[in-house]
Length: 167
Ligand code: ADP
Image 1: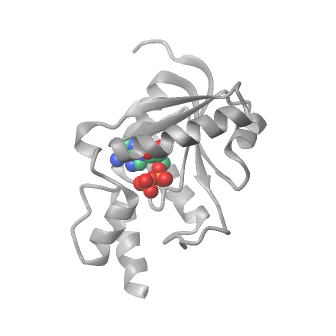
Image 2: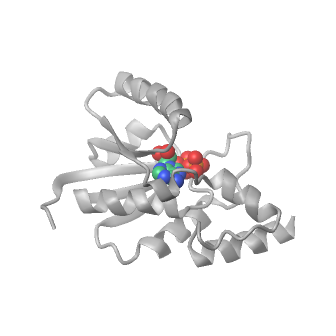
């Protein structure tokens, strides 16, 4: 395998819940960079309530990435660039699916650059088999009893079925 680049990168997101698309980006990042910190957004002020708590979301990612030696998971509830500075990370890696992601990410990258020009946003193009996959889509499918076992880790599929049944 090629040598990894020095330093820490962040892979931020809500991960409600983590999907195989997220895991593809995290795994690929771990092959390129020395240390990957997956950052789970904990935003109690958000209008849309999450299906899983930040601790639960973190747990699913830890379980799915345990075999990758250079990946860790942390919860954050401050500005992403501030959190990056706290961890000494100079880069943020994000996945890009379709044109719709581009518009949002374009804005976020410009805002983050304004807040801290030293932190670089890096984009990885989604693998074709996951380019249609989102946490929102998976939750919608699961709500209506669709089979999501190919789209998320097994434990996540089971937890989603339980959580949605409680509602
Ligand atoms: P979602 O849009 O699924 O709710 P998040 O807010 O948790 O996702 O996204 C975290 C990051 O993962 C974002 O950079 C997002 O573009 C990326 N991402 C989400 N789903 C995929 C996928 N299927 N393939 C590649 N990247 C993805």
